[in-house]
Image (cartoon, rainbow, N blue to C red; front, side):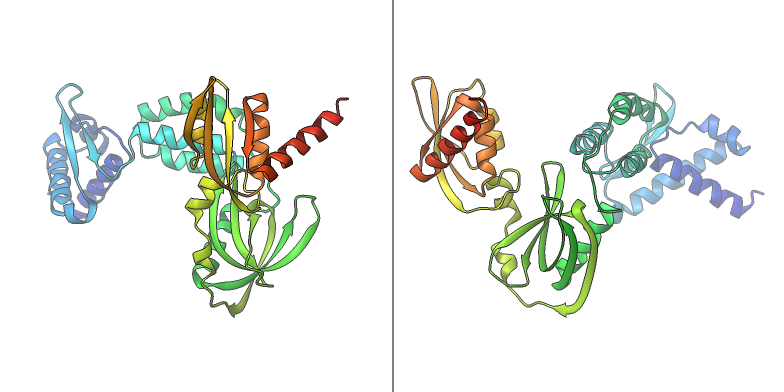
Length: 322
């Protein structure tokens, strides 16, 4: 008579193997656990029954038998597929926002949801990128801790003070009201209002926050309504603050789609003389950096004050080479 404790432990181990993406062979498992193939088949049937009974909790999940490999594998709609894992891994590597240690740790956890064969394939596809991975400079000890801690303070509407490295590398303390966090252009940004309540949202890079002090005071404010992360992401370039405005410019480069992808609010309003005329709602001064990066492909048409700003910047650049 088989020991119930041994059977239960074996059943759980087989279930965990399936959850990890392993392919289950009745013959191989019977050898591994020194039991009959019939016992393993009963275990697998028990797992199949459990998955069917718990469908309301875990969703569609089933152990599928392959007549080709003569093995079972778990198909679960809530699982990440290998294609999805590869995409996520590529995005994480390309973001450069995480330290090498954190990146490798996260990728290792993601790969645990694949079979050994697929795991090897994923490792091969990513090995060179991981080897040459170069994260952006980070002043804080742990950006994930900063992000998670600040998320709590945002939810609580708690005043915090941050010890922060500014762009000029001068370190300064700010007492702020945090309202949102977003990621773009290699960095995580904290959007907050300063304690003087001037009504202007400020952007702080999380990687430059070297210390967070949570206060016992809470703020009551509807300023969160003034911050829409989606609008900021669509209208702002490089997370530079500044005013909102509508601009019109022409583009004569080879790929107008690249401009549309970069500026989600941009719309083509006309095409003439081989040029596209575009309108866009933008926020902040980062738009200057993007437009100037396109060189002679772009000409700002209006408003006139913005056209003048671009012209002055070009003249200043030209003076360096005269």
